[in-house]
Image 1 (cartoon, helix red, strand yellow):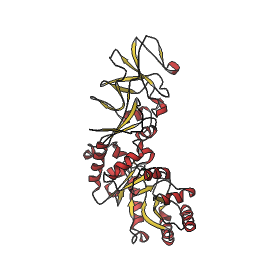
Image 2 (tube, rainbow, N blue to C red):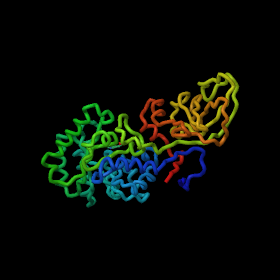
Image 3 (spheres, protein in one colour):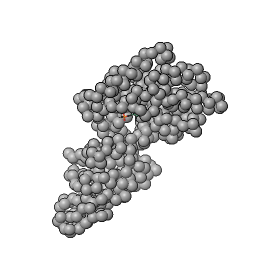
Image 4 (tube, rainbow, N blue to C red):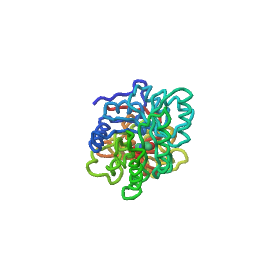
Length: 378
Ligand SMILES: *Cc1c(COP(=O)(O)O)cnc(C)c1O
């Protein structure tokens, strides 16, 4: 296996490893589930959930992905500047001052109200532009999107304005992670009823609804395109059917031990001395902190792996480093430390970390910033 490090990044004692082989495997498992004729849109917002926006965008081009989704204009521009040529849909609500750039960078975008549609129409009229848009319908998330009852009228309006090429229509699930909750089925029913109504019959449209949980649990919601992201990175919603169990994470957070010392009994560790040693022990320092996005909430709660063993984080996590108690084990400066991921037979899973931080895996992934270089296993 080859390890490709970004040539621009200088040697750094902490890094995120992204296993693109596993990622492609995850994508192909989802592809076989959705079938060959369903389009596959990969949302790569928030730096591709921490995995690297442009690297994942480029990898998507050779992995059978048909579309990319982003939250914001700037993410679309970054992908275009990196040479990504796939269709890109901006999922978030757009703003007036973004319209011309959305068009200039060949980004498809979302029309979520009559107000936004008129802003776009006016800009396009002024500058003689055309645009490719998807109509967003709110079927129960109360976030963005026109209500189902007014969707037909907005669609009819879009058809009357020359500048709009209406490419798709979509909605978003609110509760599909809990398939036993009947609400997801109500959303599917509402969306399908709308799509079956006369205005949407004659017009070719990409109809899409399902994110990760929707894609896995509700095949009837696949329609013409799915938009799963988290699951491509290897994190399955609870209760996923067994044929998805080959899907595995492709993200690991690693570092090198940067310091070692023997500490006597009764010594306080780190800011505030929130941990006091009970007996003489060996303390190592790890060069990662909340300034990298490693949550301070893991202070005195989280663990790391060194030499295939699990050791506790002791004391408060600092901005750039934290301490680990390795007891009487032999550990050396330079040893590889796994903060998230596998080592030997041990694993610190993302869900373990998320649970300790009282949050969801999505949030933990998004917090890692550009101070930690990403290394890609291709
Ligand atoms: C983020 C997002 C997705 C992907 O969600 P996952 O749960 O990661 O699959 C799909 N659709 C929209 C509109 C999104 O904002």
